[in-house]
Length: 213
Image (cartoon, rainbow, N blue to C red; front, side, top):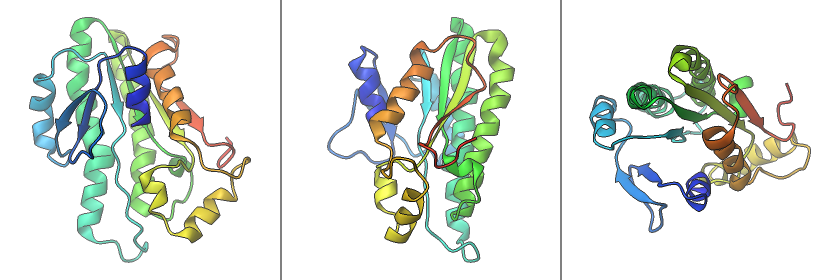
């Protein structure tokens, strides 16, 4: 939501996609469940030219590593990894035709750590690798592909974590507080709108020391 608000405040026409909207959304709403992978190409074809794609959707389940339900694994893989890949593949076709575009995927500090939610961390790591691969593949078409890797951020997903998990992640950051959504949004906007064209295939950390590298 913060990223959509940022783009809208800067004069962009925003298409907000979700499987279930709350009472408030930014720009034009598109009701769509990203688990319907086979329908993504037709969805994108019907939207017209897209200048910037932000891959922000993700799911997380706090399951024990040795007791993860198969349906949870499938949903995490579909939403966190396969849907972004299908979106990049579909959106980039139009970007090639119009002479360029920008793609920003929202990863996570969990991509670099042994995350307690096994498949969440694995999909975020794969998403960052996907970013590098597509940046190379699409460079000749002037399509920039980057990612951000936030640390613990004050979102609904963060609020749903057990208190013990929150205490653990808070002990790792310099400031002792979670990241604000607006701080991530500012970084995403920079990559998605104004960063130099030579910035591609890059992951920008927004983690306040939770994983310095």
